Image (cartoon, rainbow, N blue to C red; front, side, top):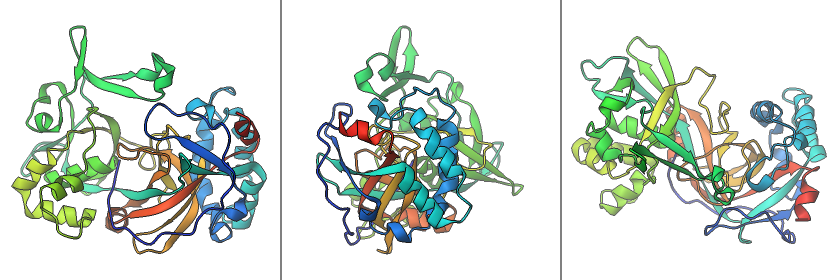
Length: 393
């Protein structure tokens, strides 16, 4: 699901500590996670955060984790321990009085250890933002509503490679069967030209290709129907192609000068509909949707996202459902230091110190999400019962 732009000032650093001798090894690739133990007092802004505000999001993750078998590993290679390691911290979180930030901080200090995340010893990373768009739509094709919002195709096949080779972790292949062969699924250009219409249900119809493309970049979205009612959509799958950001496409084509934020990109695309649609088709990735009847947009973890407290991460390194301490700045350069929950993923969210802040729904969230591209750092919070074992690996 995702984001875009401006660089702002660098921020205060997490305290330096000796790195863990043998950190868990992620799948093969250019990134390698290293960990260093911290104290909560080394987290910049720890005592100022409204810590209790993260608890509703945390309890959603706890509800999922505590229903798992006690020996189920949390995160790649068990970096988050087992589900049993989370039972007591989750129980303690549920007992914190609503709105009591001091009690919330004390709970985290009692039950968790913060670990500085670094990519091969380098703790600095990048943070962007995303939001839940709302677009106009109709349940039927009629009048100006001629652009389909596709559901998941009947011939779409997803293969979890980790089930065949554990070293491949959460890697997946997406395609279609041609006899006994698995072939790549059609790219966006073919899909938008009607190449899969006979095999694919249509959830609804919209009148704006730009708004639909932005919704696909973000992931989930809301449809404002003609009668004023709202239909919430969640991601049902993708065509498996690599994501190519529209900002890069426009920049490479020489269409943007200076301001490359998402609001600027949207304005250019809407002012140049024919050329814009051709350029948008250069992003081969395509998202399929299903109706979501839950309380909010669902993250990859399977829980509803919480505005300004849910973070999309790379699950090769950060376990979904884990608390993290975010130390960055917002689009206006103001410190953004707070507890977040790792509850989502994104095609463009790759790397150890990489995150995408969920800002919520609506135009105000769009302005925040579309302009955020901030350097920063992360600390991963893990149950104390697990952390000492990590240091011994």
